[in-house]
Structures are given as structure tokens and as C-alpha cells.
Length: 346
Image (tube, rainbow, N blue to C red; front, side):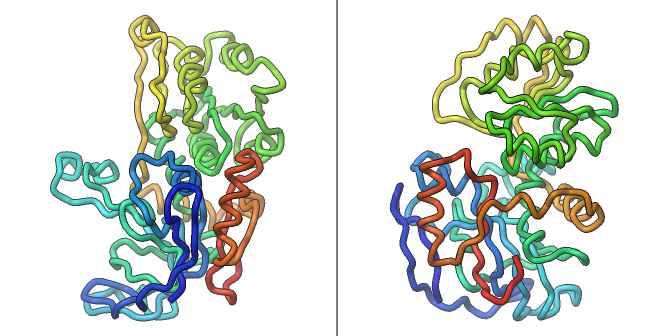
């Protein structure tokens, strides 16, 4: 069975792996249709992902068709059912798991990061980590996970109707945060350095975009909310300058949610933490309710620009070339889909 592997930073290859074993109790065998490559995979390719070990088969954004079921699997996941996966496998025993926050499990085993991913022809998954939703194409199902990460950040921010929210970064996760904030009734301003991504952000729910490369983004965001600054800033870039900007521009008594992270230490004006009495929060992964909310949005909201989110569709054999080209020009891509089943619509 073919699989795509990141052998080490900067080097990929196609490999042959053993055919997936028959599913056991509570498991399903899925014929993979579409796998999304995201910023995590790009950082793995670049050697900048501190959570991954090599070699690694990537792929945590996936859709496919159930081929076989083990015992004790619900009839809703019968063979032939199109599905998408919740790729996080928490330990269930650590402190956050016991507190009901398994998305931040201390010993998380995420597909394509700490365990082999879905960039292969078939994969066995736990049935409780597989979902289906009527009205979604296989392409749309592969979009649920990255958008859910952004929706989770909007939930972490406790965004309320009428608030002003600035989102730094209009990649897939940032677009999820924009859509999630807009659906909570906020007025969302998107900040990026690419006009095409800013236009897409407006289609996803932002009221306008700010190009921080061609204009004074700091001044534009600081001027929001009658000069008070936005009540909420969501950072979805993972760069030192945007970490600092989030703290600098947010309103007094505001909230900042960080989704991105950077390997470098970041120097911030810590006086603002106290002077503004800020709520500073991280946001990691997503929860099953986030997945359900995003799946419902994609199934029910015909206006959401799902067709524009995918920059490129490539075959499994071309995944390495696509990653290398993305690494050479990071701003050119929002999402790469790898079509693994040639008969699947992406």
C-alpha cells in the first residue's frame, strides 16, 4: 500500500507500507479520499515542528469512505459511508483529560504528528474518532478540521455579539477564526499581507481587510472601536511581530487568543499585561462540538467560500513537490489537497 512520507526536514519520499489490518472492536477501515496539507505539515517539512519525529507519514485533515467495520460500531458508520476524522488521540488520564479538556492532552497522539497519518491509501481509525454529515462532499469533509481549530479559538475568546475582533493571519485556521467570530455576531477585521487572502477573509465573514505590508496595519487596528482598539485579537500567524502586535493593539480589558506559535522567544511589553488587565489565552486543536458546528456550517451555508479555500489539488505522488513549492513561496497557498482516491471528487 502506497504512502507519502516526510523522511527528514526537506526530504520526502513515497513508501510501501503493510496493508491496513482488519478493524478491531470499535474500529473502522477507511479508504482515504482526500488529505489536506496544512501549516503543521509545512513546518514538519521545514524542520520547524517541535512536536513531530521523523520519519513521519503526515495527514490529519482527511476524508474517506468506510470500507469495513469491526464489532460494536454504530450502523451510522456502515460500509460505504463518507466520513471525516477527529485526528486527536488523547491519553484520557492526564490532568486536562480528567478536567474534560482532552484537546490539550499532555500526551496527545495526533495523526500525522505523533503517530502515522492519513497520507496513505487506507487507514484504521477508532469509530468514536470518525464523523459523518449529510450534504458534505469529500472535499468539504477534509476542510472541517482546520476550520474547527479556528472556531475553537473564537470560542476560547468568549466572543459576544457586537464586539470588534481583529484576526491576524488569513490561512485556513485564521479563516476559521474569522467565520467563527462572525457567526457569534462580532465585527471582524482581518489582517494579512496578501490581498487575495484578505478578499477571501471578507467572503468568510470579515467586514474588511487590512494589508499590513502595504499600509500601517498597527495604526489601522489600533483605530478600531473608536480608537479603543479591538476587544479581542486572535493571532493565527505564529510570528514574533504578530504576537507583539496582538498585545499592543488590543483594547484595555481585552482578550488575546494565540493559535500560532513560534520557535523563537518573543519579547512583549509586559506592562500591557497588567496595565490593560488582559486575558491572554492559548488555543490548541478543537473539540467534537467545534467539528459538529463547522460541519453544519459547511452543509447549510451556501455562501461560505469553500471552493476558494483549496489552492491546489495534487495526486499522492506529487505531494512532496507541492510541499517543496509551498515552502519556497508560503504566501501563495491557503490549502493543498492531496487526492488519494482518484475516483473521489475534491
